[in-house]
Image 1: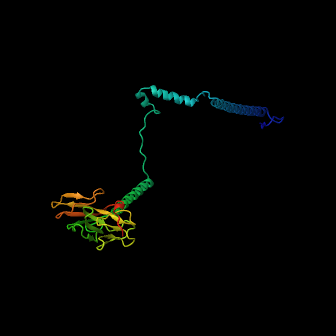
Image 2: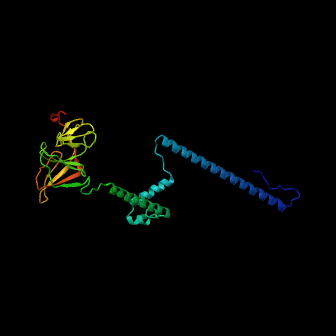
Image 3: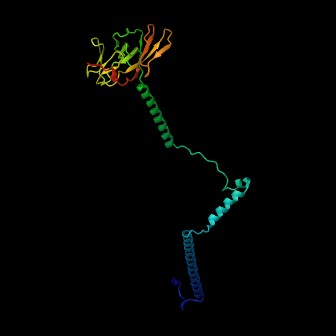
Length: 279
């Protein structure tokens, strides 16, 4: 650092020369102090770099690294908390348990929750409404509902046709009882007809033929006619018989009431080649 103080001259008095000397001495002392601080800072930085390098090398070689001062203080505090009585711990501000504070809901979050709840409610109501409309509800006497039959044809006579229920009410000799035969051919879904001349059901589309009990006696159909579930009730209204997949024909009895459920269908069994007939 350059000396900026004025040097004494012959024109200066004794007091001025003394003041100038003091100023130069003070300036040199200040410069020496700054140089000393810079040296100390440089030494401190170098020491810190050396310490960091030693810690890195120790970590690299898998050695145990000495903890810093703050880490040691935190470890000592945790150890003191572990071994101190409860009353002492509660007096420590660092170890005193704090109660969880509930977070306030702001306006934006409230609106998000409100809109989400409203949309969820609308979705639930819409789904329930759709299910209510889609669920089939059939009245008695219409297809899909229940038909009440109180009369039965004579055994072996022409089956009674029920147009609304789409079934033939048949009292077949071959089957040994009553059956409600679905009026749709099991080949490709055409509506078959009863032929008095041949005393059997015949499909006008492809020529499939079925006997009075619904058994396939000529192709191209490969299975018997489908049937609806029939329940027989006595005069007291008690159930006495019912068709199932293993019990397809029920007893024909005067005075019985028969409930034909067109919403429940029993699929026809595969055709039996043994009962096939020549056209």
